[in-house]
Amino acid sequence: MANPTYPMTRQCPMSPPAQYAELRARGPAKVDLPDGGWAWLLTSYDDVRQAMNDPRFSSDDDKMGRARTELPPGENLNSFWRMDEPEHGRQRHMMMSEFTAHRIKEWRPRIQKLVDELLDRLETLPRPLDLYAEFALALPTQVIAQLLGVPQQDYRTFAEQSRTILSLDKPEESWAAYYEMNAYLDHLIEDRTRHPQDDLISRLITDRVQTGELPPEDLLPMVRFILVSGYETTTSQIALSALTLMTNPEVRDRLIEDPGRITAFVEESLRFWSVSQDNVLRVVDEDMTFSGAAMRVGELVILAVPAANHDAAAFPDPGRFDLERGENRHVAFGFGTHLCAGASLARREVEIAVTSLLARLPGIRLACDINDLTFRQKSLVYGLERLPVTW
Ligand code: HEM
Image (cartoon, rainbow, N blue to C red; front, top):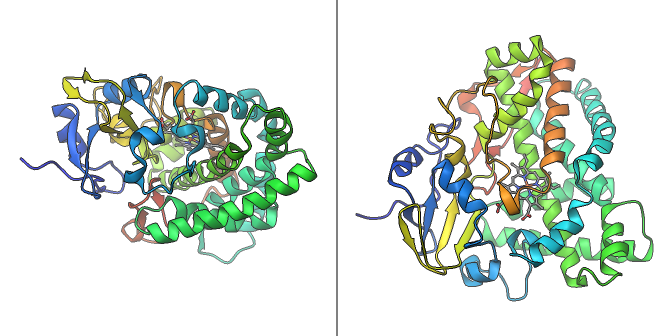
């Protein structure tokens, strides 16, 4: 029997691809890839969570095969995300000191201020308006720009470049955007080397590069990776959370009645939408039997986060957006060694965005038929193209 082909598309925009349910019953499955190769696809919660934290699976770009990803030689595209120990831990630690729960708590008032300013502006715009561009996209891009020290006037360019880099259907445009971003960041790093400021890029230069801890050639990839990974995911999560509020009156009323449910809402939204859809990959690093499958060194493994987060064995009635799930051990941020470095920041942004949106615009509603919304399928990050709203 022929292998199923990957990536699979969502038939219903509100649920992961239906094939995941069939494949889950079979355990690890071989799937054919667009480049002619094949990979293992893990779809059960237990398999995905275990593989995320099992050192027999490597995250190393080199081991995954540079030819497969058409990566130009010498390019460090994904920074420490696609490295193994000990270098991964060493570089991750340099970034994590900026992203501890404590540091992020300090960011709370700044995020609130940005949200308030964006909502002030929304109220002056003609309606219907696009909540995706004017709010969901604007917030994370401005947060990440402030955090890194990217000048405010340039953040829209970054947003467009990041989105093009992450798209799966326009490889030539993707690479062009990638080189443009590199040229800009190169310039910015040069500037911060000469004139350090109170931002992440300057601190990485003075505390890590100039002390010899971080090789200078690894700085730009780290900054670029934070920039690209830090906004598209959070943007999608905010837009889709807003969509849930507008299409699920039960959930929205419950949240208005008890604003203390916001943490449960954010966690359930992360699980339900699982925006990291096609980018959690590993490569087998030692011959083994994993969950009944004989895996060999060098074979590619795709960890399907949306499938894991919709596994009924871990989340009863997974298609239901449920604010009463209790402990929500979803893997939307990954798990273990490579657990999302920006999880605390993303959680705060979504929480503040949703709480403020509900408080300021309680009558907000979709300004189109739900069937007219366009969802981005061919992208590493699932999400909406636009979100027309009115109130
Ligand atoms: C809702 C928003 C987000 C989602 C759903 C998300 C999802 C993920 C996932 C699934 C991983 C693990 C990948 C793997 O195991 O290979 C990851 C890693 C990572 N994320 Fe996020 N992310 C989000 C926001 C952010 C933000 C705001 C930042 C930075 C400001 C960020 C930076 C990173 C970094 C640096 C890694 C690599 C960690 C490592 O390899 O040690 N992410 N993210």
